[in-house]
Image (cartoon, rainbow, N blue to C red):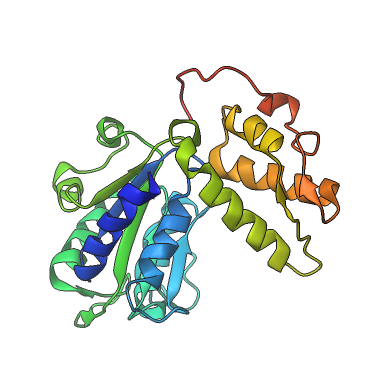
Length: 252
């Protein structure tokens, strides 16, 4: 799967300002792929931001900013993401929660690269920000969530779909190596010698209902239990809700 995705990433990166849509269930790695796109785009590494866990009513203000008095709680002016990450990349997670008005303004930004803060009657300003949108919804669900068809059509040809981890087990070793390196690099991190064949069999036989998020947690615990040696099958432990079982289709 990763071998298939990366050539598309290179293609998108060459099209600097084209907005990108990443689809996939919770924990499938949407934010990580967005980060990769940013890193290989040549944009400043510190100019990368994400919009997550923000009330729907504040999403537009987070993106565009606002002037003092733009709405009831706007007691002072605020820079939006387009100003903060000018020259970089901004990820809008769960973009289906955007209001129709926010969609309209983003659509205009995609076309003209200009925007203004909420409540600002002055001229629009130009910004160079690569927008990446993510969602855990299926494409046919987006209209029901309130996404305008014209807005969606603006980037539907520039999308990446990340299947559940159980459907791309060929990626498991790549992600496991990456996570173990991250775990070892943490303050007081734990470094291991590797993973035994029996442990790999156990990992490959799991259905990973929580995808990469679960894999990282399982490996973090296994690394601690291995105490610097090889991760054995006994070190690979799943919670009761993550119990190993047959791979069956379902919503992830």
